[in-house]
Length: 212
Image (cartoon, rainbow, N blue to C red; front, side):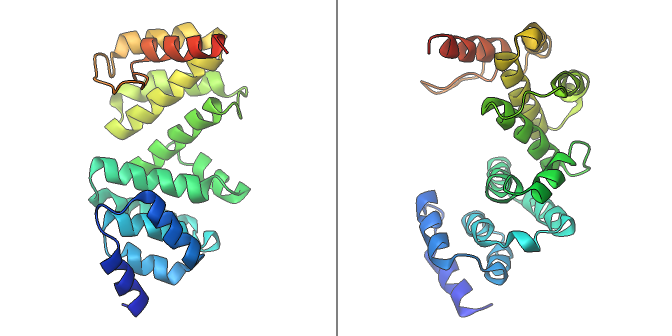
């Protein structure tokens, strides 16, 4: 292991703030070899930093598969955060990476399926994609959500929520989906946060936009 990698691993603590990781990454810029050294530590915060300094050009489909499989050793929240950072910082930046991301709907790797659905939800949340494939995606969610792994269920539910908010023609189906599955019904949410239970989520988020 290089001296730089050892120094960073000694510097980054479990309570290191995400903003501090971004500052460190800004100083390093891109350094894929260093990123791989940090990744091999198997520690959560160093892996977040590793993602920030990876070189997109080195992220082939095979490399991405390996990274996603590696994330499985982390806790539920940690691996989902790592996947979100990988998606946000790399997979949504160029047409090549977006094409890879969009090919993951039926991937055998759980986190890749989660990333596909999370990306579809974010597109609709930001108003960037209300295309003709929306109803087909909702049909897939209706058929598969109860058989999926928990993290994929969450992402499918997230996508159905934003479809319900922005597509009036499909809103009743999205509400009915939540009523039938009862996913996240009665879950505690922090003050100011929107519940994940679809009927409540769609009503609250729709009302917010109606008052603007």
